[in-house]
Length: 365
Ligand code: AMP
Ligand code: MG
Image (cartoon, rainbow, N blue to C red):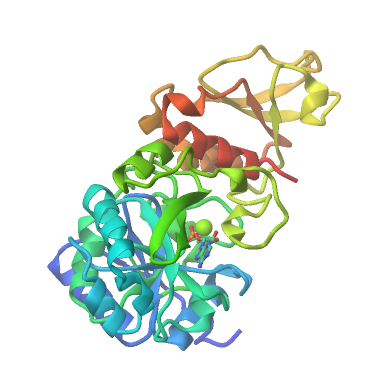
């Protein structure tokens, strides 16, 4: 590998005026900076610069079919300007569409909501993986907003981790995976929410948004979203939560967010469910969920438990700590990470749905 491909050191920047200024300079010259958002750390590049965007795919070893989310400055949307700049297609400016988009923006932006909208010409195909749509999000974190407000382009920023692996919620998580592969990380401390944004695809009929589809569950409650947008609909479609092989929204790949250690979910204390018939002689890292279950029958005297972590029963805390806990368990190099028990129902809090989705994919083999 040439020195250029393998930069020796990734700079760690403070989230102050000087750090923000340095981050901006790197981004303006086509470089990569990991930035803290309220969800997870994003690996940012100029979304209008195809070469800069290619560097994201290279650093993450991300397949080109997986589109990137584009992050825009706040605190309020400037749809006309974004269309004028070619970030979005002019169809979003149709009166009825705009009414719904503005209602959503008012209630959820800046925040963990990504909207899939018709893309403008300035967004390179590399960002949208050739789709005619683009995922748009206005992040809430101060550091990222300071950067966005100091530049004239939006930022493509997928999670700052190797493709398919556990998303980073601290600057040191970013460095564990990408040190030397990116120019800098702006250290804004631990991300507040801890799981990725809720991704919503509005469905259009003429000029009107008539329904919405949740492509990835996150902190936002789908029915509140429908209510907020005053959408005449029965229930938001959640069909994409179901397992599908469709590569339409590849964050939904069956295996994603995964530790290196094999991970199995023992749903009901029945070992066969987890696909492991015998735990004897194995070293385990255990993640116990809020609705605890007893260890499976196959758990014998010589099953060695290296660590037994418990996920918080508070949904906000559980989402906040989820990826850090998974990283800790992964670092033990156990034979298996075993998930015991179950999560509270998604109806209790939208984050449980988000956590269920991440754990299901993380344990998929
Ligand atoms: P992340 O890697 O967390 O930034 O998430 C990016 C994910 O957003 C992708 O893997 C897709 O699932 C989704 N996404 C981004 N752009 C689009 C789009 N235009 N259409 C559908 N899904 C998208
Ligand atoms: Mg990701």
